Image (cartoon, rainbow, N blue to C red):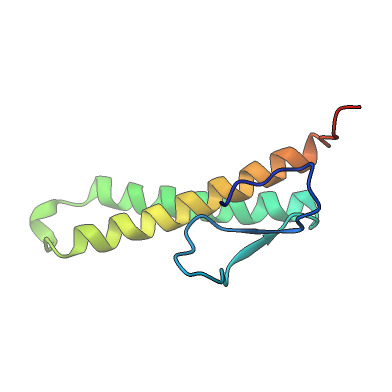
Length: 99
């Protein structure tokens, strides 16, 4: 459902993290590839920073309820970053349909 095919005319790609029938969060596949890449890097950096914080923190200081909240945030950031990277990569490689 959310896989982007660069050979179609679909300009807007819903993020895989959308859980609704009408996805409110989309990627403009015709945006500048550098802008798409920067958005991806922001999300992956945020995810990496959160993982670093968890690595340095003791679980004795946290609450068991925090774990699903943290993993959900990590999932959203990482998956959105991967979706954006996929589109940026395909745009930067300038894929064209075979003749």
